[in-house]
Image (cartoon, rainbow, N blue to C red; front, side):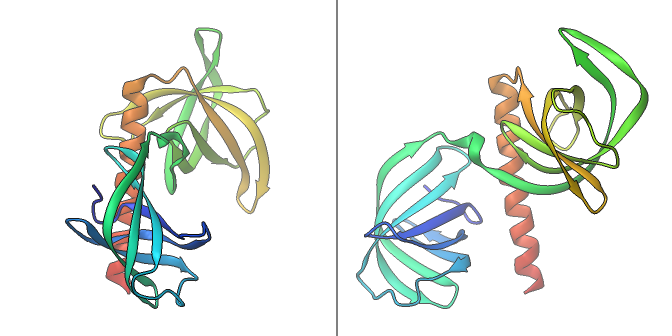
Length: 207
């Protein structure tokens, strides 16, 4: 079902979004949500609710449930009943700060060495795209060969720059992954979920 630190959302029975956070505890057909954003302090015991959990195994799982308790930043849910499980893995994204060096661009099926390597910072990652920070603006449509070394095994990826936005340190570039296969998507999705758990665990240690 759900695992500790999996990201999740809680909705009222009417469909209103009440909380976004992560699974703090789970036991059988009940769980406790630790909310990063929370508007549901008015919930009463027994109220109907819907919880969506992004599972590393099943994808996005939606459960019907009832409220066990509602307190500041926490919602307890019981009687979970699976409504649907949808593989929406590509939509899950995690912020990062991972330095990488890009040495080649891609034209057709050829890799062409750059005159000077690009030092980029991977600012966020999903299973279908990345945002790259760079001191220099990169033209939209540029295809770059990126060896992503933060996954469990290095991934040779091709990213296409879609847009660039000025930021304090230079430019942020929204990129789409090209020609990614199922194994690479699984690796990236696993990285995203593990990194979300790691970051939340760090925040919990600080609190």
